[in-house]
Length: 501
Ligand SMILES: [Zn+2]
Picture 1 (cartoon, helix red, strand yellow):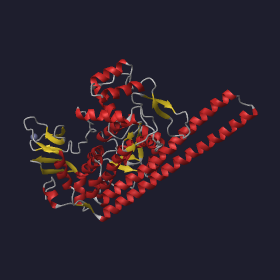
Picture 2 (tube, helix red, strand yellow):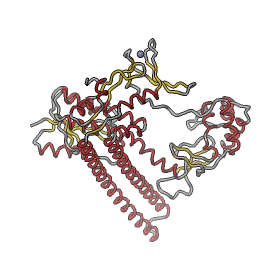
Picture 3 (cartoon, protein in one colour):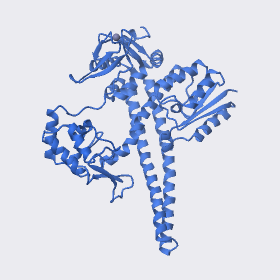
C-alpha cells in the first residue's frame, strides 16, 4: 500500500471559467487511490491560487511531506495543477525525484517517472501550460477587443471624455459602458490642443492650464506634463480608435479636436522632439546570457542610437553586444533542431487528447449555462403573466424583471467567455503542432514571449565572449531528448554544450 498525497488547485480564473472544481479533482484522484488499494494520507487544496508561481501554502506542505518522507506518491488530475511554467515544473519534478516520490496524473496519459521519454513529454506539456497562462491573460483582453472592434473604446475615458451607460443599450455583452465628450472638460482639452498647435506653449504650461480649469486624471490627480504630451499624440481625440492591434479610423465616439488642429500639434511635437515613445521592450535573453567574466548580461536601450544592447552587469567589465546580433546568434543555435517522427506523432496524439478534453469541459459548462438561461426565461414569462393578471404590481415587476435581465446578461457573458476558451485551445494546439513539426520555423514566427518559452525548453544559459557563444548550458530535458534520439541537433551545438561531444 502506497502513501498518497493528493494535490488540488483552482485559481480564481478557473473558478470564473468553471474549470474542474476542487471536489471533482479530489474525487477523480480518490477513485484511482481506491482502485489501487492505496492510502490517501493528505488531501492538499490550494484554492484561489494561480499556477504562475510556487508561492502556495499547499505546495509548501507538499514539499514538507516529500522531504520528511511521509509520502510515496503525489497525485493530481493534471500537470497544470502543479505549475504553469517550465522552471517551477522542473523544480518540483527534481524534488520529487530526490525524495523518491512518484507523480501520477489522473486525467493525463500516465507517464512513469523512470522513463526519460515520458519525462520529456511531461516537461514539454508543462511548458505549454505556461503558454496557456500567457494566452489566458489575453482572454480577458478579448472581451474588450470585441468591444473595440465594434468601434467603442473599452477603457477608462480620457480627459475631455466620460464613461456613461449606453442609453441605446441592446446587445447584451457589448457597448454597455461607452465614452462620450464631457461637456465640462471637452472645451478645455480642445483649447489645450489649439494652444499647443500655436507653438507658444509647452507641456508644463499646458498641464498647469488644464489643472487650473478643473481637468483631473481618472484617479483625481493633476495630470503630469508627460501625460499631456501623450494625450496630444492620441488620435482618439480626432475620432480614431486604437486598441492593441485593433485600429478603427472612424470609431463610435465623437471627436472633440479638429483634424487640422491635431495635425498642427503633431508637427510641433515632432519639432520639439516629443515624438511617440515605443512600448516597453521584452528582453528575450535576459537572465539567459552570461559574460565570460561570470556576470549576467542585462538589456539596455540606447535612446540616441535607437538600438538595444545587452551589457555586462559588472561595472569594471562593461562588455556589451547589440541585442539584435546576439539574438540572431542564439536563434542560429536552434537551426537544424528536429524532433523524431515518433516523437512528433506522440505530441500530435497528446494535442488531440488535450483538445477533446477541453471540448468536453466546455460543452458540459455550456450545457449547464444554457439550462440556467432557459429556466430564467421561463421565470420571466411567468412574471410577465403575473403583471398582466395583476398579481404583481408595476414596481415589483420592474425590480424582478431587472434582476432576471442581469442574471441573463451574466450568463451571456459566461457563454461568450466559453467561446474564447475554445478559440484559445485551438490556438494553443496550433502552436504546439507548429513547434513539434518545425522547431526552427516556429521559433522564427513566434512572438518574443513565446520564443523565450522555446529557449527555456532547451537551454539554461549561454556564455558569451566577443558576441559569440562559447558555452551552451542545456536543460536536462534537452539532454534526455538527445540521448533518447527524440531530438536531433547539429553536432556543433553539442560540442559547445555541457553534454560534451
Ligand atoms: Zn563581464
